[in-house]
Amino acid sequence: MGTVDCKSCINIHCFIHKNLSPEWIKSYVKFQISFKQGQHIIVEGSPVLGIYFIQSGKVKVFFTGINGKHQIVRFANDGHILGHRGFGNDIYPISAVAMEDSTICFIDNETLNEMFLSNPKFTFDMMMFYSRELRKMENRMKNIAQMNVREKVADTLLLLIENFGINADNEIDVLFNREDIANTAGTNVEQVTRQLSDFTSEGLIIKQGKKIAIANLEGLKKIISQHNQHVITK
Amino acid sequence: MGTVDCKSCINIHCFIHKNLSPEWIKSYVKFQISFKQGQHIIVEGSPVLGIYFIQSGKVKVFFTGINGKHQIVRFANDGHILGHRGFGNDIYPISAVAMEDSTICFIDNETLNEMFLSNPKFTFDMMMFYSRELRKMENRMKNIAQMNVREKVADTLLLLIENFGINADNEIDVLFNREDIANTAGTNVEQVTRQLSDFTSEGLIIKQGKKIAIANLEGLKKIISQHNQHVITK
DNA sequence: CATTATGGATGCGGAATGACAGGATTGCTG
DNA sequence: CAGCAATCCTGTCATTCCGCATCCATAATG
Image (cartoon, rainbow over all chains, first blue to last red; front, side, top):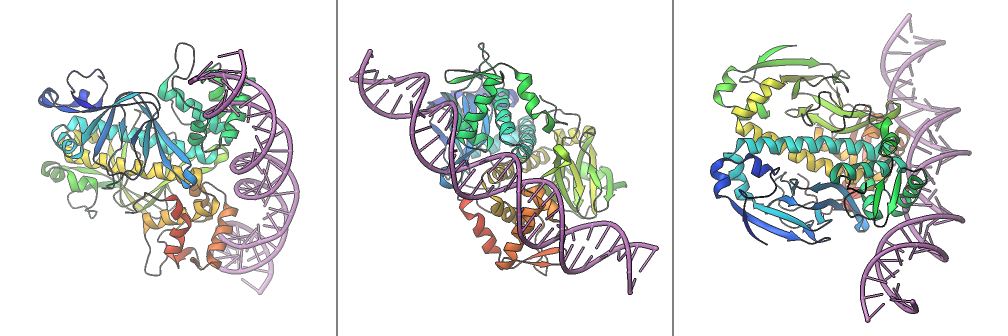
């Protein structure tokens, strides 16, 4: 944890870096925190003091339901936002956990408000970000409600690919286990295991240690294609 | 369909009316369209030409899934927004249908962009709107994924109450049928019918003709209370 | 007034799903 | 490399859920 200035930030895609006026970017110094894999960045029920920007890292955002069961609502990585405002609530309804070592910048509410007031382009970009996220979320809601388990697991894999990409070995480039997939898809660990076994024997994926390699991306997309008539990917 | 100026608009809670600068509000004239109950306002797959503001009315927003099954993702009424931008997509992924006779204002993309550029307060308010909607949607995703049918139906009734309120006769003040509830809750008509019968015999609701009256709001909330530990309602 | 359409209620069988348990595999540690 | 713990895999079984078919009530129609 320490302070850092945005001007020399390595993440040039960050909403702040991209949009702040010259005066702001020159002078602005904010808090930056390092999180180890598995560490909580936001805990449900704690007070909202500001907003988090991911400089670099991979994060899952989830609600805790009854029996402590998690529902992962989205993944976030470089340049994304955590702990958005809204409602005027003063506590976080969600938790956020680092899936890998992550560097996160924190901006308190007061500073954020000043930023909005004096940087219209920043506000506009934030609005567009929320608008995109809302549309994605609406689409995911439809999927969770209408898909069967096989489709939901395939959909979750594609979501992971979309968010975190594929590395040189064709593997989904993030650390996650069956429980994470189950909590994202809205099913349980056993069903996920079964489906992944099915996908493997169908030649769609290859299990490589802790990671999953994609052998046939089109095949995975085909599983859920009938649900995505009007969706333009990317 | 015709043109109307925002200055003399009856809906003083509209984002435009509230936030446009004096110059804009004085001169701005936009299209206004009347929709009869059941009419399509937006059709999935049609090109995005602008954005819709509801001056007055009640609207459901849904995706069409396989077999033409609808998934209602949200309800909208006075002052709300339809057809939000995002992705740079040029087609609507969702449909919107008037649940009752509605009056809707249309603003084309070009004008909207000018509005954002020259009215930072408007942009800020829109950002906050999207942020709130995103949080609501995240919460609804958790509910659909984790609740059983009984809870989902109760949750849908509460959603309808939250959006459209209760009239003098204690009835949920909007026209909807079992299919709409099923398409919102993520189940089917039969299950909804069963649950509504159960709720009736438990004294939670009273069926009055086409509408549903609430006899015990706290009882309904109690059904889903265990899912809402950290949520502050309104 | 008879007929037809529409929406709602309910029983039932088959399919999908989730819970449990036991076994296999993997990776870590001393 | 043995031992242990964590994770993953898979078979079985009970439950839930869904959609069909049917019946009923009410409203619209001629």
